[in-house]
Image (cartoon, rainbow, N blue to C red; front, side):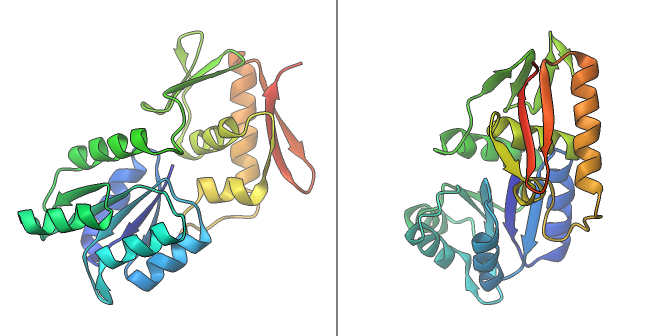
Length: 224
């Protein structure tokens, strides 16, 4: 799951990135409205966390521009401006939720889950492929009731392949799903994650195979 964080308070941004990463989320962090627009044009995000008081203007002005460009990712406004009038203005401008600072990370995660459940692009709560069951809410893969232990990168690879199972996922799309803007990507890092995931699926009897499509990407399909 890829999240865009538009926040100019670097200490808070660092804390949010660390907390969200612990819940298997890739976070792209920018500090201005202009950078936010560029990030949205560059990559697809499941949700946007948006501060209001940014160096180049009110974060709320970004929302109508997003909707005009048919961007449907839900937006949660994070701001110190938590008075009733501010909250009403934020929601009327098009925000999906409005959370006043300071807030608990658990509440933010709950609100993220809520807006993602309402989002039209959200996957079903559970999906079954081969012998593997995947719970999108809990980010948990099980095979015959036994949890599959996957580190964050491998879990993100699995999610991206499950979303397009039976179709080839281009390498660039996989990298976009697994890495943020600030992540350093070694030349063979993605291949290593895919290889580890393939081995674990095979060992656990998932009934799924990951095929490399030379020069294109990877394909997840039922084992023959």
